[in-house]
Length: 478
Image: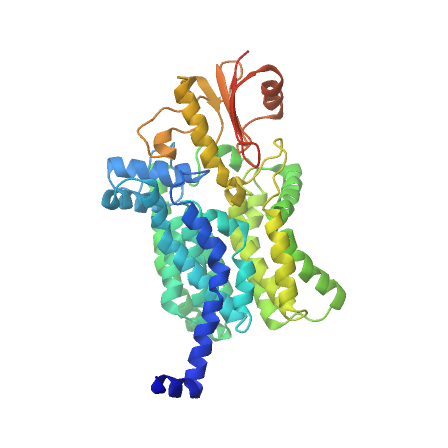
């Protein structure tokens, strides 16, 4: 005991004690994320994870994990890392929902740890407080509830970024390799991080050999990314999508009118789910004080501009690529920019309290049914699982065949993919001229306004589950 007191009385002991206490403060910031993860362990696959994780994993599980290629109907053009890993988890631990969610835990842990390290790098004295707001981001919270490739992307992104910030070469290589293996967006993130590292560090740019030595760090991810894309194109003849793929319409050129519409949608994406309140205080402070930006703010702004140019601008050129989760590298970086501006100009506690309360209030922004929503970044999608289970039970009780029931994404796939059950029956496509029944939910963006009006005015309600924020209605042809 006396030895412990002597250690604490020394300068090193006090520093160590302060360090331990500092990290303990971050526990409170992780409470919402931890709750979201734990409450979702038995949830079925949701939104894009039905094909990016479950369907691909099922194919590898059935046909073997010795191939990188998938059938065209489930081949998204991305490296199938998530599905491949999930198939191995099923082989080792058994096929189940809990095992699937637990597979994400190591990646979530790596992502969270390196997010905290990144915050500590930029804000060494305030990072425990800022972490509270950083980890309340609705995209991060909701993706942590899913078996999502984007959780793996977050892990690779912040590992590589922290490696750049602290010149940890192994972290740069490992984080970049993870990004290169998870998706084509991950590959673009590698290029963005490589450019950022080159711009921020003069020591690399002093000579040709300095640049070459730096770029050698990115040879392993370049080999992985280039090797996969070349192999895929040699065997398939296409990158990203093909004419008959389910996501081909998203890659149709937007044109000038579509580009302008996309700009409005982009602004909405950045403001959605309360994220607007992350940006308003720093914008107001810049307008009022109009002083010079600090070196830290300019550095973070450079990173944001790089991500924006490489990730977002290409998405503006196509009709359906502006998904919320695609924007997370930009949103996370812009959050750091906001933190930097505010921490230099006002009391952080006031900003944290104001923004946290209003940010969480944004989680309750449930738009009218006629407006498409990004439910995979909305924490309140949570009740979807219960209401879907209720409606599936009612279908079984009334002996209604899903094959004669129209339904929309993300619940139109078979229960074998969504719940990992033995039921391989699919719902029918939405066709009010042919469907005997229609299972409608406000969580689907597939129904047109005319179809919703017809169902509500002319069809008979057989069963209903839920009211707000998520509900299902089973309609029968009159």
